[in-house]
Length: 329
Image (cartoon, rainbow, N blue to C red):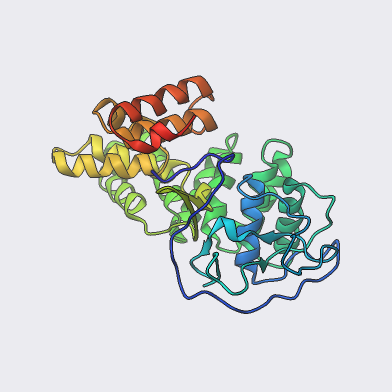
């Protein structure tokens, strides 16, 4: 299982690189939100956005200054950041690591929004993409401009959502996907394959379609931040996976005669949150996939949101012997 619900208390994480003992000095300002490297700042903002972290307005009993030390990561989270090498856990001498500084009256959503804007304006184009996703339901034009900005800078993860906002212009959408292919973005690569499958040229493009599907499914692009609870994981930046990559793996699974390969591809597709793959595995008696599917229903990711239906799949996972399914209420 590679998902976790936003309201869970996250209490353990995977070990990563050596723990940093560097003390990051806080800055008392409402506008300068990043006090660490940009990727670390982005990933922490992402956790606030998705409600995996909440603002901390003060820490008792350890000598920290309540007035100026805000936006810190709790040692109870056992937080691991693979790329940055910064980890926070109870074994550290300095269990609190300052990552963001912000006004104490800001909500988690506002913290994320301000951080993405500041980072994007500073040239951190992954943050432009995150900002674009954050605005997608409220300001499509602004989102499109942000995705375009990232895609133009050859940030592949911006090209795929850009294409999705160009649904009224198929030629430009395909051009955006092709740019994503050039920049090794798996969703864009899969997107081109499915565009070709739906086209009049599908028969003559069979070889390229197969190549694109294989490239998309086998891509090694992964999120950089992992947090966990009792074996469950949440991966920061997981939205990079959402889209056509999981569908590519499932399409390959359906079109192979090798049973073991089909099983492996279906499992990979489910881990990429492709609901049809999780559904098939659950029906085949895989308890973990039932829990995955339940999470998708609770989140409304790839399926219509239905919390009660999600809980039924949790229970089914439990009945099939997958213990985490029994722990979710």
